[in-house]
Image (tube, rainbow over all chains, first blue to last red; front, top):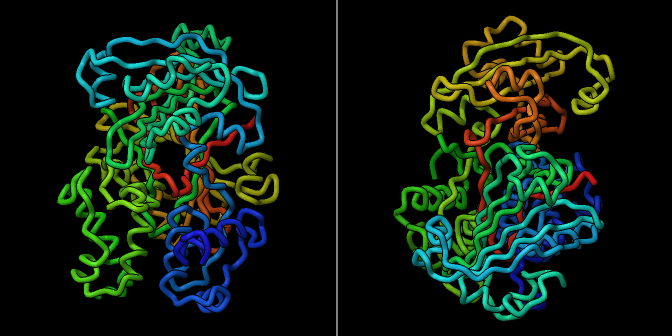
Amino acid sequence: MGNGRQQHEEITAYLRSAISSHEFAPGDPLPSESELCQRFESSRGPVRQAMATLRSEGLISSGRGRRTIVLDTVPTQSFDGVISYSEWCRQSGFEAGQITQSVTRRPADPTLAAALEIEPRAPVVSIFRLRLLNGIPAMVERLNYPLEVGQHLLTFDTDSGSIYQHLIDSGVDINNATRTIDAIGADPDDAQLLGITEGAPLLRVRRRAFTSNGTPVESSDDRYLPGTASFTLNTIRGNPSPLSMVSAR
Amino acid sequence: MGNGRQQHEEITAYLRSAISSHEFAPGDPLPSESELCQRFESSRGPVRQAMATLRSEGLISSGRGRRTIVLDTVPTQSFDGVISYSEWCRQSGFEAGQITQSVTRRPADPTLAAALEIEPRAPVVSIFRLRLLNGIPAMVERLNYPLEVGQHLLTFDTDSGSIYQHLIDSGVDINNATRTIDAIGADPDDAQLLGITEGAPLLRVRRRAFTSNGTPVESSDDRYLPGTASFTLNTIRGNPSPLSMVSAR
């Protein structure tokens, strides 16, 4: 199989790429289970596993009692693109930019301490940057790290590019992340940096990132200008949506 | 097996429910593949398929070279809850309410015609409602249907409850949906209905719903008061995120 991937991962990767290249276009039927088994010299298990994954990703229809078809394509996003604005820009064909406003070492306030699961007043490193897209203001970024992680940033030039890449290169284990998306009015800092009026609508993405054993390594707050960013996904009947709407009421 | 479900679906449903009930709590290791095979008298295929599905939903860690663990729980949402605000309220333990502003039969403008893939000026039925959560204004809802679908609503009491349920009961096939989430400032109608100032931030969810053969049946625009709704999801390294951030720039 090469490079240690399991067979269902090979099949998933092949189908995902064939769908995104429109080799299998929206509305087209997917090859049948038996055709895929033949093509990959595979038993049904890995083929079904691959199809379950693509269904969860919203790429193909439920196929219950019907031929499975390729859906209107919403591209999936790599984990790197989820964590890193720089990486998202690169994958989307944009030039990322950043203007650092501050790098601060300080004691955690109670909210941040709870998000990072550290003692209140334990030291954290906070980065505050204006992010650019093709040279134009796009997003206000607030990144917070426990000192053990953030220490790698105290001597890093945060105007030079991806903090995420620097943390990975420094050996930090970033395994999974939870994102919460909502709308918020611009605060005075947001308004000044983005050139908008206070209270104007922004799309906010709060993110907590964790090591593979569940220790928080980052708590962040990104605020995008409307028109700069939106989120999109497909959901298929019979497949629970991993994106959950929740109410604070 | 009961009710025709495949074995991997049984296993997925069992694990999903054990995770949401905290029988398997965040941070706990998941039972090993062989333990699960034993418990379900299953071969490895269906167990691996179930785990692939849960990983795509962000419920369990990647487990590459490590024991798979249960992640900080983000509940998944049923397809019904994705399409229907009434159903989402019911699942979330809230009381849904609605005050219809208008039910209109009219020719589609070019944007709506494109979204519904019908001829410009083909007839559509548009519903405009204020939605309540536990009796308090929460969201402004704009639903649009091609006449073939919307005809079922022209004689329906849209103050009586779920339009979605009524369409399903009328035999409309709603199989999958694409949602696009962004932030927008309140327009004069939004502001008046929600009791906020014009331009105040709202979380917008635009949705297109399709039959199982890809024909659009609905194009909608829901605008939530901040604090009423946010979206949340987990992403695991090695698993592409089905939620894709896109830029209109």
